[in-house]
Image (tube, rainbow, N blue to C red; front, side):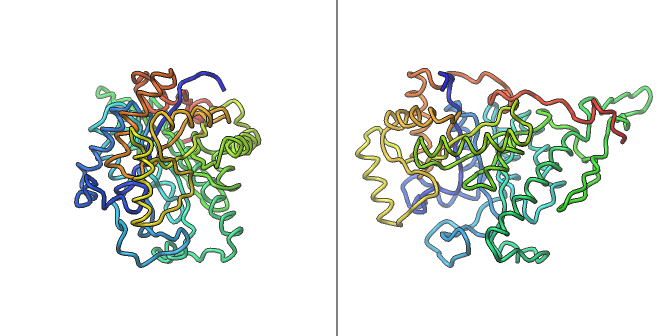
Length: 392
């Protein structure tokens, strides 16, 4: 793996990834539904020069069971809409990318396109989206428009096929206004050049969308699209449609195999020349003293036993830096860290891990670009319709 700096992001959700996080001193459970709480978290991430933050979201209430709702009242339940929260926080920051989670299932891609384009405007080019699907029947029941397949393999094939089409529609809508479509010519009374707005005329098995969007082309041209991937269908979504994939390897060998699957999908989609980042997710419990971190994890688990889809690391920033350096040899370009307790572990990331990585020459010492695509080394793409002369 080249000695290039790592990319780093953090996942923000509630009081932290661990279900007992809200009970910890400093967790601010009474402020979870306030803008100030989230503004403080994102400001801390920016203080640490992180590439991005993701803000989790879903259609139904959080649940300890990933496949069904639960009746628990001893864990955080309820959250703010991630996209609206991102738009509120973005103007308070200057450099860090902000990716709200948007559920594509049951949500029209036209609305997703305008929402994320708007976020890109209010953040001056630091917007993006983490797309996900909703496979739970209780989520579908919130809308009452469709019955999901009972067979899980059929269900995931349908949902990720729909998600692939949705991302394509969203991207085409972002391109439906050429960059110079707004001319603001007061002398002639022409605000918009209508010939530079285009119908996308998308026809697929899940959507039929004409366009154009109501929102002009975003500052980045194409905001960053990311997805969390655990198995074949989302691996394919990352390779064919996304700029960034979050994966959950068990170790370096597993990470290497996952990256290979995504690269194969990327090649099959004709995207071999494009940069598609693959980052590993890690849930972290950090302390300057490694034993203290492991003791804190044990105390949290004693309060509410917890397992995660990602590897859970408990130790010191130096030990975590060692692990990241090892995992990156598998072809990973970065990591999304999930602080177990945001009140504690986010600061250990920004003020402990980041300086350690900087000492090793593995992380930036200052922001080198003003847009999220720039931070990730992604070029601003040309508008697909501007060069084709597509009809309006």
